[in-house]
Length: 109
Ligand SMILES: [Zn+2]
Image (cartoon, rainbow, N blue to C red; front, side, top):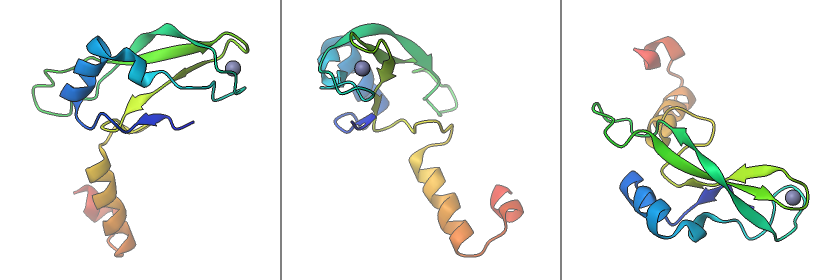
């Protein structure tokens, strides 16, 4: 199972989908045991709006719980980076600068 839902590329799009089409986030099968029986299990907050105002924070991330193995999983929109604070574009820029031979100190500056 892919952890990222590719349909939602922007935070505003994600927030509309959470309110209107939550089913688009429900995985078809449990990523741990493969059983196709997942229930909604609330959500958790994440600070995903990196703008100066951060007006869209906190952003809800839906969670699901497997009825067979009782483990939980969540799915993220494409605009979120799993387990990373920085966005995709900044990560790509830093990696490309590292690969071009620039020092981390200079990149950080
Ligand atoms: Zn399971």
